Image 1: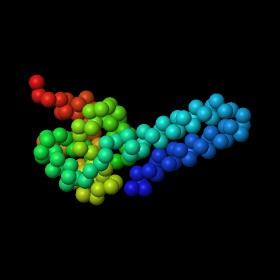
Image 2: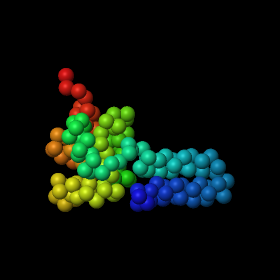
Image 3: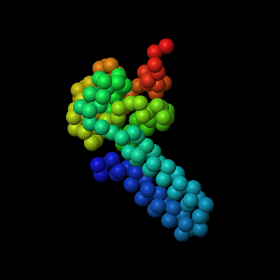
Image 4: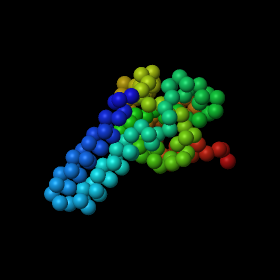
Length: 145
């Protein structure tokens, strides 16, 4: 759990240090702008922007019932963040598995990516797709016409 917060905490601490230095040099406007930038980066890299993660077994069970894709992700992954942001509200239709919190999820990702923990890995109808285009993922969520 703590590992997921390391990068956001580093952004907050770094931003605070930079802002403090700029404030002491008499640049409060620049300090505030940079602090806001660092806080935004911390927020984007925090596990809070992702829907609640579940275990791989539960995700597979739910996917078998409702047909929704399973996404394997990890905090701090820029491709996972891109996917999450570009999906917007549709992201809640997916079953999210944080591979840093679920060793079985990490093993499942390694099994389909030649031993690498490459994320995001999306499983649609039992077929894995590594780092898929967000537009393609959105199409997978649309009901068939």
